[in-house]
Image (cartoon, rainbow, N blue to C red; front, top):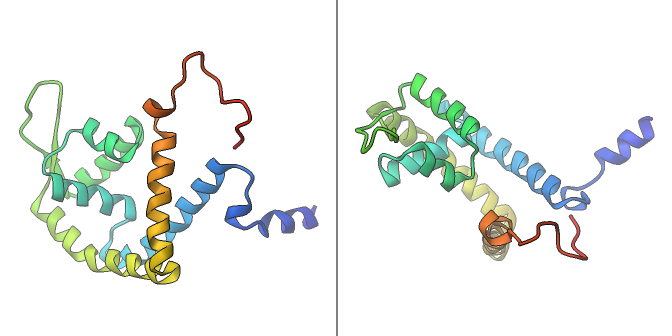
Length: 167
């Protein structure tokens, strides 16, 4: 049993046989790296991303934020609840009864400003480890994978996977 566990632990991220499992593993590794840099400001990477979107886009509905990040409703609700409880976001003026936009508060702006240097360090560390060509290739791959995995782009009549496709 020990030998099998060692063999599993030795598998590099790119060696996992499933694209989804590999992407999720890489996501966790990147999240941990960014969180280490953001820890001093008391912000996690997901919180930083949400605060950044609200800072750049202004008040947004939960649906708009969810579309941008690909979050399901319950995950996004949990994340926004934490930001509300910490006073970093608040409900904004509603355009309609059905939509409840949220916006950064002054404390949210201060928190984002305090966390930005850590985020920049995380970005710089990743870019340095990849090199400029690797950095650009990563972004190209992200765009390609996002387009390939987007439901509107991959939905097929009759359902099912393409013949000959693999994970």
